[in-house]
Amino acid sequence: MGHDCQMGHVKHLYVHVPFCAHRCGYCDFVTVTGNDDRHAAYVDALLRELDAHRGVLAEQVETVYIGGGTPSKIGAPLLALLLGALPQATVETTVECNPEGVDVELAQVLGERGVRVSLGAQTFAAPLLATLERQTTPEQVRAAVSYLRAARVPSLSLDLIYGIPGERESDLARDLAVLDELAPDHVSAYDLEAKPGTRFSIHHGRELEAQGELLERHLDLVIDSLGYSGYTWYEIASFARSREHEGQHNRAYWLGHDYLGLGIGAVSTIAGARRVNGPKLAAYIEEPATAPTTIEQIDERTRQTERLMLGLRLADGVPIAEVADVLNRTALERLVQIGIATTTDDTIRLERRGRMLLHDCVTDLLNDDDAA
Ligand SMILES: C[S@@+](CC[C@H](N)C(=O)[O-])C[C@H]1O[C@@H](n2cnc3c(N)ncnc32)[C@H](O)[C@@H]1O
Ligand code: SF4
Image 1 (spheres, helix red, strand yellow):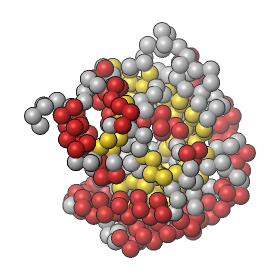
Image 2 (cartoon, rainbow, N blue to C red):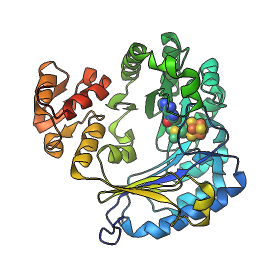
Image 3 (spheres, rainbow, N blue to C red):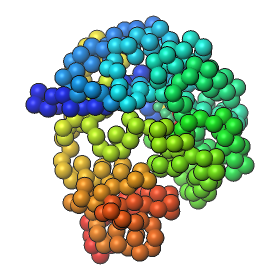
């Protein structure tokens, strides 16, 4: 990846922990079920991969994000070992947890180390959890929240999914009322996507395709309700109680900063090259630094295209100068005229309606046919 000539500037580290108790039907993340006897060997492999790439990291790493899969699945002692061996982040360390894996001991490990926690609640309606094939119960989410609060984690985020087949607006309103009551510092609210190749896309793909309008109404409700509860909508799927609780690791990604990814399936983008680690657990544990990877060069137009697509997710928008080569200025003028975008301070920002129609706006703005 050109590590030798680009040493020491990467400030963001992602660590993938793929283990899950069971594979939820809608999920296409790189996950592994069973293999509980390999947790320690995998953590050891992560640290060997870190050693192999350590040279690309800056002296001060700003953010570390341990995602999954289910990082909480490896248990408190191994998670403590991993957190202790990774570079100490100066801005934010986040660990993704599944509620059923959070007990007093795990919460304590996270609280003592000042770790931000992202907890997958998804919905508090038992029938919808069953549709998602989630094994977690709403009571387990509540218990996890109280353990994490008692352990004083500095920031707690809950993930919500809406647009679940069979979900009515009243179900979503109830989920939002529970969020208001639990009062996390941050909420990530995703519309359910039928990821190709998942069981979900086979059983529910058509239903999900047909619910475009419903999703818009759901998103309206999410934005209004979380706004009323005091959250700022700072990114298309992200809401924070205050600026200090915004996800800084994800922000770095949306801003197109370089990052190093460790673990199976992990992605790294460093100095114009993107590396994707292979998904095979055994090969990775055997020899993490040389397990199969794919590498792609990111040219300037691709970089600017990604910068526009990701940057417009943020309320802060994208400076025009950073996307000048790929921007259709006629389309931009048109979006400004109809009140969907603004260009104050030479920065493109999408207004509420524009962010709700993000995909269409980005397609318009990237269209290189000026007559479009
Ligand atoms: C890495 S995933 C899983 C984290 C954790 N294992 C869990 O299940 O809660 C992070 C988040 O992505 C979201 N997600 C996963 N698959 C999705 C899909 N098909 N559509 C929308 N959101 C999805 C879920 O909200 C999930 O909490
Ligand atoms: S949604 Fe979470 S728990 Fe379910 S399979 Fe995906 S990563 Fe694992």
